[in-house]
Each structure stands twice: as C-alpha cells, then as structure tokens.
Length: 357
Ligand code: MRU
Image 1 (cartoon, rainbow, N blue to C red):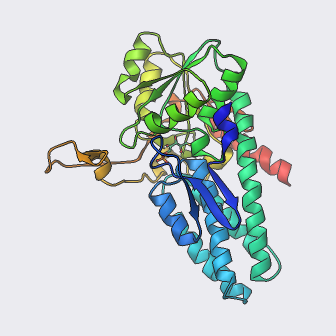
Image 2 (image 1 turned 60 degrees about the vertical axis):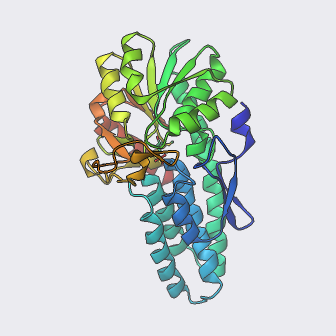
Image 3 (image 1 turned 180 degrees about the horizontal axis):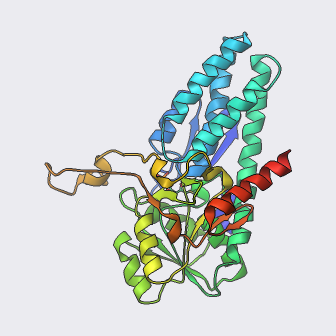
C-alpha cells in the first residue's frame, strides 16, 4: 500500500492547511499551503482540493484559518463569533453539492458557539478539532473499506467512476477504500476506471492512485461501461457520493446515473460508499439536491485547446442524482445500508444519537 501511507491529501501543518494540488496531477505533484479563509474559498472553488470528504475537511480548516485571522484584531467574543459566522457562510458558498462542506463548516461554528473563553482560546479549540476530524476521516474510510470488502466477489472486476479515493478524502478513500480493503484480502481483483469527463478525475486521479498501490487498473472512456457490462466483464460497481437524501437518492459526479442504469439493466450490483456525513437527512429526496453548474470551458476545451465549434451551446452540470431504486447498498462506517433506505438511513442516524446521548 504505497500511496495510502505516503501523504495526507489535506493536512493542518503549522497554522496552514497543506493540500495536494489536484488540478495538475498526474503530470506534477505539488503541495499548496492555504493560509487564509479567502484562499480556502478559492482552493475549493478551483478544485485544488476536491471530493466530498476532502472539501468537508477543507471547510473545517477554513473556519480555523478565519478564526486565526479574526482573533488577531478582535477581543470581543460576540463580535468575533458574528464575523466568524459570516466567513463560514462565504466558505459554504464555494461549492453547493457536496454536503460534507456544510457539515464541516457547521460543526466548527457549533463548537465555537459552545466554547467558553476568549477568541484566542476558541481558535485553539477549532484547530485541535480540525486535526481530530482529519484523523477520524481516515479511520471512517478504513471501517467503510472493511464493510465494503465483504460484498466484493472473489476475483471481481470492479467499475468505479470519478475519484472517490485517498485524494477525495484525507486518506484511503471511500469507494477506492473499499477496493483497497478488498485487494488486501484478494489480490486477484481488478478495477475498470471511467475517464470521467469533463475534468477526468478517473483518468488523472483514480488511475494514478490505484496503480501506485499495484492494483490492476484499466482505463475506459465514460461511454464504454455498458459495452463491458454486456460482455460480462464487470462484476460490481462502487462509487462515492456528494450528497445522499433521506430516501437514498444519491448525487455523485456527472455520469454516475448512466452507470447505475447500465448496471441495473445488466444485473450488476451498484454500491455507493460514503460516510454518514454525506447523508443529508434534512432533504427528503434527490430532487432537492442543488447541482453545481460549472464553467463551460471544462466542456469546450481539453488541455487548453478548443475541441468544438465556437458558437455551440454548452451546459455543464457537475453532478447527477441516481435514484435509490438503482442502488444495491450504501456502504457506511456503520455498516451497509439496504433498501428500504428511508428506514435504514433513519435507523443509522437514530443509533448514532443513542450512542452520543
Ligand atoms: O467535482 P469533484 O471532483 O469534487 O467530484 C467528486 C465526486 O463526485 C466524488 O465521487 C465524490 O465526492 C465522492 S469522494 C469520496
């Protein structure tokens, strides 16, 4: 497991948030130090850091960075908290779909509001909490990996879409965490990685991660998945999630829905791997999930070159929603949730609040 142990995707180091610049991988490996909340907004929006759990931690770090800045000039607690909340809302507006960002930012604001002491003392608590959540993210992914590995058939070829790996989290990954844990038990498993247009997270990031760990990986373009399913060459699909509604409808990278339809048609089990922080129980169904519309240039250009007619119309949603009836199971750190998702999701959350109370 070379990649897994090498480096954290995002890490708090000496009062900065250090992250891998994912825009330039795999050509170049570079670390970026994000020093202010405003820089964090840009890092999330421009996708220096991306993937739902990773931007959740970016939100956590962003609030800690805002607290460091504000505590330098503000000693009044009420004024400090009010300004911190304003920065928090700004951070949350950087990307709308992945609910982990809202989760991470809100967790920090709740903690700040319930902490006694001066702005300096609150800031210290927020930094410590950020480091704790970073480490928890890796532990959660490993638990998900263990649960998920149980449903991977021996010698399976697993299809994945986008990048739900170590790079989309602090480390280990959600969907790729399941693949890593399955591979540790059964080195005969193989992976098919969808390219994932327009930003090519599958081609650039998933293949980079998996090949470093020695996991046999075949890159295919997005339109090829049904062809390989029809040939009986795919045994299972596992993907990540950006937001899961209370009924199990799941938003993930654009193209996931197409894969899920193909999997249903060909009787291939289709799994989501996501931590409970990706489940938004405040929304009833996928219809309520906000879908990010991204720059048209992502579609019109490849590597800076125009690839289409100049006056063509463009539309570029970053995510789609897979209806719950296409999902065989949702792999979480508390076990695998099965249909009926309304009940299994509710039970998972009730069990957590029973443990916390
Ligand atoms: O636009 P991105 O690259 O942030 O989208 C990422 C995805 O859609 C991932 O599949 C999802 O966040 C799950 S990551 C564990």
